[in-house]
Amino acid sequence: MVKDDYDSVYYAALLKKDGTNANADESRWLIAMEFNDQTEVAHWQQDWQSNVALVTQLMQRAVNNHTWSEETQPLIDMQADWGKYYQIDGTIRSAARGGDIPGAEKISTGVSNATFGTFTDAVDRLSKANRDHYNSTLNSTQGLLSLYIFLSAILYPLMGLCVVWGISRRLRDF
Image 1 (cartoon, rainbow, N blue to C red):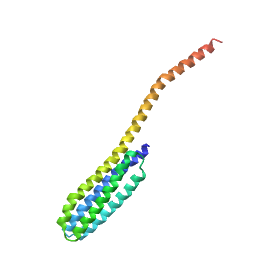
Image 2 (cartoon, rainbow, N blue to C red):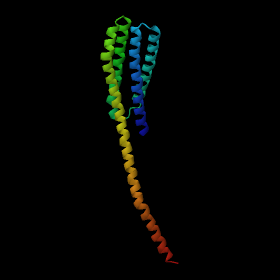
Image 3 (tube, rainbow, N blue to C red):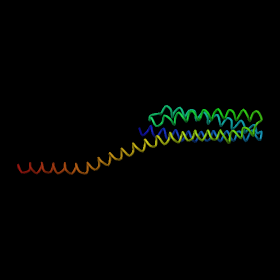
Image 4 (cartoon, one colour):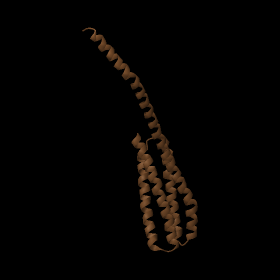
């Protein structure tokens, strides 16, 4: 259970990092388009595609690692929000390639960033659900260990007294 929780929190952190990198690449690509720097346009396009592939792969890992019912809605929201964000990116790129850089920038800084924000919120909720389960497991384990230590502190000395009592009764036989 702990490994599952750890993996889910880790995947969520990577999702947020790689998603943020993709979002930044979109903006960098748009700036390169504005300055007509084709070398940088190609670079940021390729970087964006790499980060999108990583996000897609990590989302699949997160879905495959789905264990708790609290993860269900964040996973659904995360996938839906990423799909919307991806579609909006296509609109931004079409507008920019068509020469409407100001329109593309407006979409990028408006609805695109808002949709990306809902994606990261869903990732945060997924991470929180797994951190909560991890903390619950940790607290339960610590409680049981404390109980066992307490019982051991009482039972072992009592067992020792019983052994001494038994040996002392046998020593009288000699």
